[in-house]
Length: 327
Image (cartoon, rainbow, N blue to C red):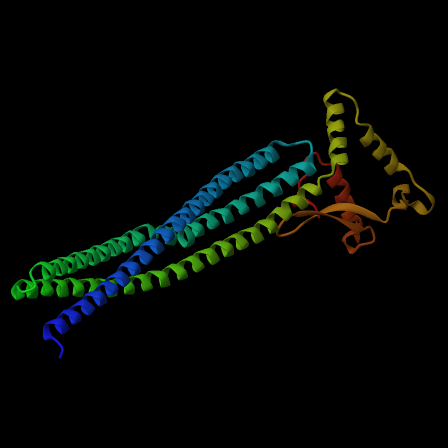
């Protein structure tokens, strides 16, 4: 025949073991959350620091780009001899300035769409860590109450009043820990959902911002490259030599030669210069985006009358070489 006191004692031992098992599970959950938050805080903090550094260095490059654009413009304004170089520098200055405008937009987008969302996780992780700490304290408090109950049962098993009060304290501590554990679990699920979304969105925004900027940069850097590749070094050097000769008071042999050549006539009354074997000549064409040097056939409709030819002669004789007035 079984002893009721022994059965009661056995039930209490089972409850105690179950309680400790539950307490261990809550503690493991809290420690898992603590590790997860600490890991997120570490890498998100580093990510925020690197993105912020990239943004600041981009701003520094923008400032240097503005200086470069201004130097090209000032040099172009001061250049009065090498006319094709003057035109190339002017186009470079315009396009470099546009690139820096796009770079400024890039900086603003990096700050608003990448750096700021990640930087918010400093406070978010801090709040989660407070919740984890509170849950661990509740688990420890429950653990303490259970140990006190176990000692009371061992030392004074007949004092039902104290045992009952200790059991009430354990139940209250267990309830607090259970509520805290449930709240922590909900908080961690919400945190993880937001963390996944924000990291994905921020990284996608970062790559999109870089792609848009570099696509535009390639477009305008190509215009800079094209304008500088169109610089006619030989012609600019000849112009310099002509200016140098004029500065020394020496007559311009090129102008004298051209004058003599224009007076030379051939059969049918045509100038010998029109009989050149080269079917092309070079001129400059003003477009909406840049000044581009092109090769045009002499039989083109652009040269359909004598007035155009006269304008071309004036164009090559002018001291001031301005692409905006070229055909």
